[in-house]
Structure formats: C-alpha cells, structure tokens
Length: 116
Image (tube, rainbow, N blue to C red; front, side):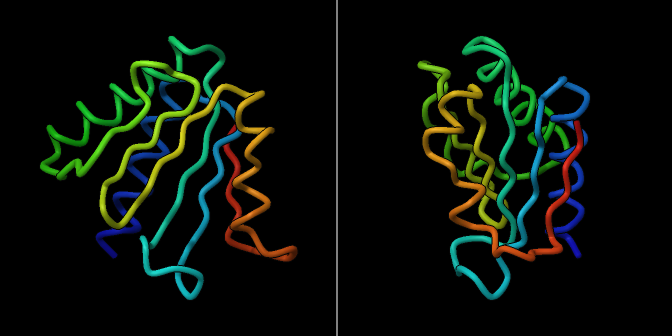
C-alpha cells in the first residue's frame, strides 16, 4: 500500500510539473528491482532536470528516502531511485531510442496508466 501511495505521489508531481506521456508500470512478478517503474518525458533537458528536482524536493519533504539520482546534470535521461519505485525521465527522442516502455510492458499489460 505504501508503495502505491508513493507511486501516486510521484505521478501527481510529474503531472503538476507538466511532464508528458507518464506511464506507470507495475514490476510485481517481473523484477525484484522495485515494485513500480514510472517513465515520463520532459520537453527539454532543462524540463527533465526540473522534474527530477521537483520529485526529489517534494518527496524529501514527505519523508521519503532518495537512494540515487543519476543523469541530472546532462538532462537527457534522469533516473531517480526511490527503492520501491524507479523513475525514468527522458527527452522524447531519448525515450524513443531506449524504448523502456516496450521492454517492461507485456503486450496486454493492464497496468499501463497514462496521464497526458
């Protein structure tokens, strides 16, 4: 339950920050890395970095531990590791190139949740 609430908090932060193509993927039964993976786009490197800053600052205020933030300086692909939830933030063309959505989603996965 705690992980679902954390997942929902992150989705709201991203939505409030005008992230695009937000997809939440349940990793239960797929990986022991985390319970959820959230993938979203920012419109530019600056937007991607700002989204990651918002996630980190707002979740720290709520008392969540941030394990790692990678790629924030470059801003093409930022990974925020919250333990049970992993967030990938991309510029659109970088997301298309790596295509993590396809890698982690089953063809008929009902766990997809898009907020545009």
